Length: 152
Image 1 (cartoon, helix red, strand yellow):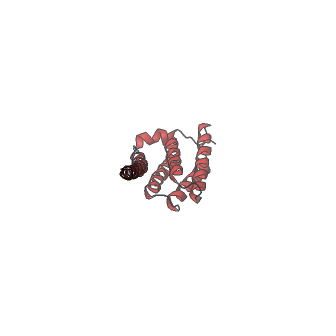
Image 2 (image 1 turned 90 degrees about the vertical axis):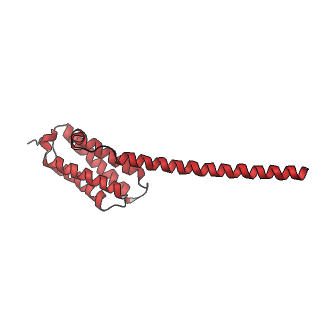
Image 3 (image 1 turned 180 degrees about the vertical axis):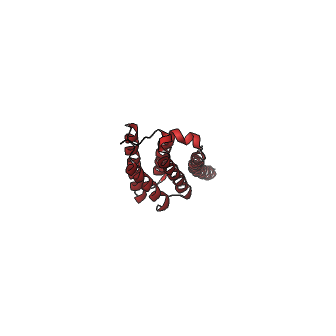
């Protein structure tokens, strides 16, 4: 009888451990599914022209932050992302002070272009950067419409 009780107890312990491992696996899968759902929601956010006009720098910075969060920490792309964000901040600071700086804008456009074309980023992140790049080029062509006036 004791042998049967021990065998049943051991069998029950095996089932509990197997159930726990299975639950951990499902939890890990759920976390990955949540990450993918977040990615899908992020990439499906609105990007029409009216929304962009007032938020061009904010949206690009948010896109860069997002890409930086999903890019491996010690990749060369992290440096490019950080540098492009720094240049974007410098440009926005000058614009807030009423100074339109074409060379600074060209540096930001160059940084976005390098990230969109020469990086190891996911395809949809590179596509998002290409969209940001087009918005910056539109900004360069029509900066007066955005309230950025050339001073001189």
